[in-house]
Image (cartoon, rainbow, N blue to C red; front, side, top):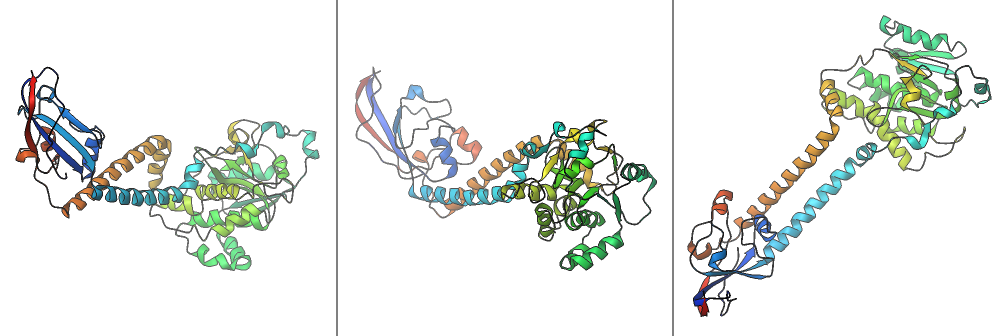
Length: 422
C-alpha cells in the first residue's frame, strides 16, 4: 500500500516498566483485496479506515512477527483506489441495469399468476345449463386447428372428433400448410418472407393460429386437446388464453373476436422476435411459442391496453388450470402431443423443474464473476504503480503468502518513546 511514517508518541500499554519502541506506519489502500482487510474480513490487524490502531506484543496473532514492538497502523484510501472503485462501480452498475432491463419482462412473469383476469368457476354455468343461453356471444362460432395436411394422425383423431361432434353448429377450419401460406400471402404479404423462412415447421403452425384469430376470430384448439363440453360460455369473453405452469400463458387453446387489439399486437410482434437462439426448443418457444406469447401478454398488460370488457374492450381473460382440463366439468381433455419436441427439450424441461435452484446458482455465479472482475481490475491498476517495499523489508505473513499478496507499505519508523511498567 502507500506511504509509511513514524510518530513521536504512541499509546502506552498500562502497567509497562520498560522502554517501549513504537512502529507506526500509514497504509494506503491500492488494491481491491486491500479493501477486504479494511472491512475486517482479512487477517488482523485491520484498523478502521482513518483510525490509528496500536497493538502491544502480547496482543499479536500467532502468525505476526513477535519483534517486541508496539505496532501502530493508520489506514487510508489512496486517491487511485477511490478513482478506480468509482469507475468500477459505475461500469458494473451500467452492466447490471442493462441485464435487468433485458430480462425484466421474463423476471416479472415469474410472479404473474393472471388471477386479476381469471375466468372463475363461478362465472361459468354448468354444462347444458339454461344460463348459458343468457350469456352474450362475442366470439364467432369457429374452431381452428392446424396440421401439415388433411390427414390427421390416428393418435389425434379422437380428440379432433370430440370437438367437432359436440359443436355441430360451429364452422370448422383445418389450416394445412398450403392453406396457411395462402392466407399469409393474400392477406398479410408483409409477413410472407418471415413465414417462409422459419427454420422449424412448428413456428409456422404457431404463427398461423395468431393470424387466423386476428383475422376471422373464433377458437383455436391444438389437435392434442379434446373437448369435454361445449365452448359456448367462453364465447362471452372477447379474448381469452389459458394459464400454464410454471408461469405465463400457453397457445394451445385460445379464443378471440376478429381484430382484437391483443392478437393484433401479437402478429405485429412476430417479426421482431424472429431470432435464432441456437437450441431449437428455445428458438421456437421465444419466437412463436408460449414463451413469446407470454412476453407479449405481459407487455400488453404493462402498456395499459388490458382494460375494458365487451366487444370494444381490450381485456384478455385467463382460463385457469382447473377450468382448462383438470376436472370432468373442465372444457378440455389433454391427449398425447408435443410431436415437435427434440432432444434439447429434455434439458429445458429439467431446467424448468429446477428453475429456483438454477436462479440461485446464477446469482452466485454472477457474484463470483463480479468479484473476479474486481480483483483483475485492481491488479491492472497496480501494474501502473510502483510497488512499495513491504513492511520493514520483512517477509509476508502466512495469510499474505497464501493469498499471493500483502500489505503494501512504505517506510516504517521505530522510536523509543517513554518508560512504562510491564
